[in-house]
Length: 326
Image (cartoon, rainbow, N blue to C red; front, side, top):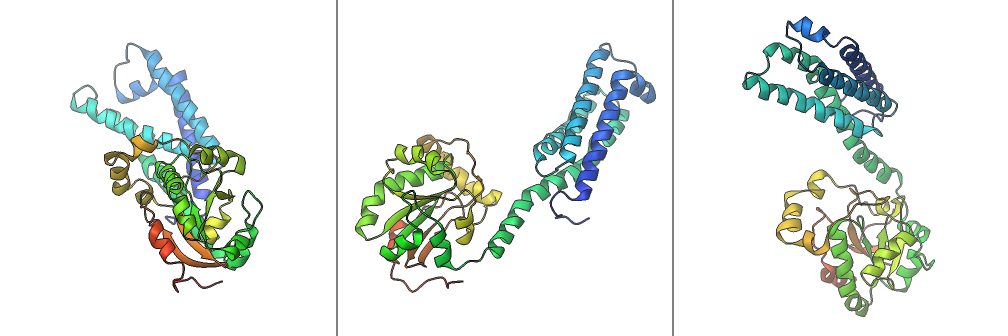
């Protein structure tokens, strides 16, 4: 079995199907014959057998959940995550009570079949789910290599002007946003509001790129006084991938640097945070200076908390550091 498998591989489905059947059968045995497992282990029956039967009902419910996840393991990954959390906590709970002398060691045998043997396969399913979007991200970028001028001509602002037309008129600063619930994205919008006149005085036109529809994004732009700024809606992330902006890894989204900047520097309390709507929260941002359909300068974030060097970017408009056209 390869560590990284194709989407919804048969081994994932097999694991979840077996886990579902096992959980249902075990749960039914607890509900219908509650004393069976106690008799098998040579233990006294508990005073409140109904609580034990409720555990059986929970197991049946989880089994049904695994069978639902079996149909599409990666899409139904939250069910697998909940199952793994429970299967990790159960042995920990046993260990605590065992050390207190309140449970005999023989109970651990049940933890082996109910919990421990599922750790690795469930973890692998979650790991494959996590990695799949990153592998797909690279494939999309590799398979959608387009001429930069074609790419810019396909995308239009809310005023129905193509990015290529705008870049032919004057240099444009394309600012690719993450999602509007992101603290650092909100900070970027605030910075753009403060710097837009200065950047415009340098002959550069700002264009914001986002993942929402034009209507949904307008409320956020109005909040930061950016309703007069040109913007491009790119929900399919075609423009993002065309500029080689990838999904960020956990260390780039929730790294130590980001946490320090978010909490200790007060960014969280200043700009807040919210949920995302129809956006990929792992999409990384970036800023590009484009002139006449060519990239003249760029800044691609290595972490979401990186400060954007607006001044350095505008200074490099006439730089020879460009990316070749495809």
